[in-house]
Image (cartoon, rainbow, N blue to C red; front, side, top):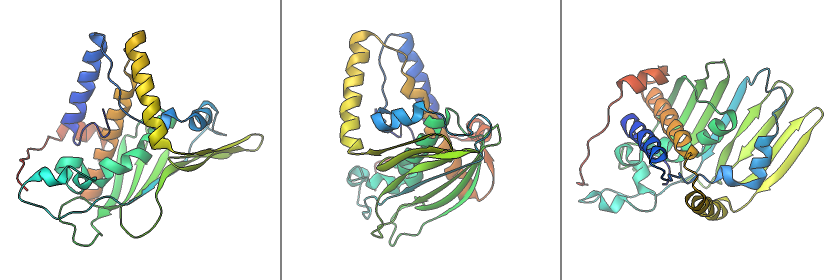
Length: 266
C-alpha cells in the first residue's frame, strides 16, 4: 500500500485495525516506504546520534517540492493523476499529509516515537489554487520527553530544487537524513557519511522483494503499518494545528476528529 494510508484520523485507525487483523490471520500488509530500505540510511540509523541518550533538543525537518496543479472539472476523475489530488484536502489529505509525510516519517523512524503536541501556521501561497490545500507551513512539535521538532513545508513551483530530510541535533553532535543526497553522522569522536541515490526506484524494488520474502517465509508482523499510521496521525495533527493557528494535542484529535464525506463531483 502506498502512503499516505489515510487522510484523516478515522481512516488511519481503520488501517491500523486492518494491519492487526492481517497479522492475526497470517497475512502480509506492507506500506511502501523507501527511506528505511536504503543501505546508507540503514547504517546511519544503526549508529547512535552523539548525545542522543541525554537529550535531543532540536530537530528541523523540511520538504521543499512542487506538485501537480489543475483546475477542477465536472467530476473528480481528472484529479486522480499527477499528484493533483494533493491540492484537495478531502482526497489527498493536503500537501502536508501527502508530501511532508516523507520528512515526518524520517523523524518518526529515527526516533521511534511520535509527538504529543503541535502548533504552527500555514497558508495558500500558490497562484490560482483551485482547491483548499495549504502549501506553505511552519510547524513546531514537542514529544513527551521534551524534545522539540521544527518542520517547514514549501510546495511551490518556484524552481527551487527538491529537498526532503531532517537534521537531528544531539547534545554533542548531529546527524542528517535525506531522501536525496548526503546522509551524515558527526560527533567529537565519530563520523559517518554517504550519499542516497535513486531512492524511489531502488526502494520500490527492495520493497517488492521484501514483500515477496514476507509472504514466502511467513513473516506477518506487518511492522510498516503502525509507522505509516503514526505518520498520518502526526501530519493530520499538525495540519489541523496550523489551520487553527493554535496548539493541538494528539490525544485531542484522536478523540474528536471525524472523517470526511465526499462525492465524485468536480
